[in-house]
Image 1 (cartoon, rainbow, N blue to C red):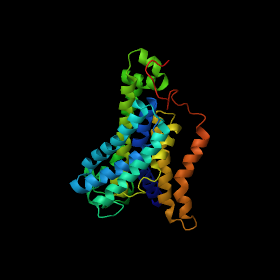
Image 2 (image 1 turned 90 degrees about the vertical axis):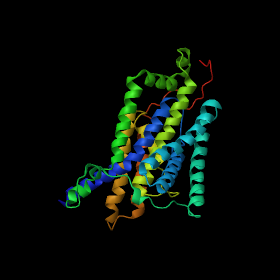
Image 3 (image 1 turned 135 degrees about the horizontal axis):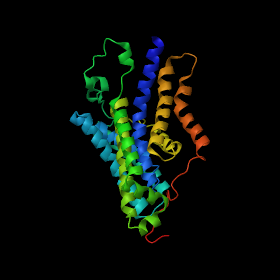
Image 4 (image 1 turned 180 degrees about the horizontal axis):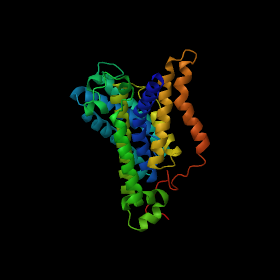
Length: 312
């Protein structure tokens, strides 16, 4: 029975930590499939987490907080889209700048609104309800039900993954998005507005990354702090590469990374295992996977390349 509780708890924590990664990785898939490289997902997640925490605390609604987090991420995505699509700037440098801007402005806002504190006030009283709570199931009398609690955000994330997969591979819109990432010149000659599609996809990546940050702040940490994201945006980027720039593949990769994070929680009570080793496990796994799979992955051919009208 104890083993079963541990297994169920590990699955539950895996799903909880995977949800923000899935949202963010899906954003990375969408924008990179259109040809715009976005390594600013980390900053968009941080800004989204900040916006979600602030709005949720002052409104008392986690759902409004999630919407606010998505909007905050979209704000930075508009900036990145302008640099990458309109100004034809270096997309890597722009992404690095977005990471600094997102974290910096988020800390400024929390210091301004919460009396100099670098973190927001707790939103634990306005947390996103769990699945059993929504279904009206009383789990107080069963340890199995308590261990098997499912975070509802992972259900939304998986739903988004299938929607994005369907749009990318089963619709004309998805074909145009992929064409802009593979051969924008050919897409342009067929009447596809490359700039518009890249703008929309980049902004959508910010919406999803901001939503991922919002889920982290409202469903896991219950507040914004400068370390609340702690590299999750880069882990999501690794999931995009590991998943070969495909929505379902990236989602499965996020579940793997979420499992690594769950192990750090479940194994924290082992006396002979240093906590520092556990803390580095998700990041070590990220590096290992990138080393093994980066040469086997095939990115869109026009990824990171600005498009000029009439370019062949």
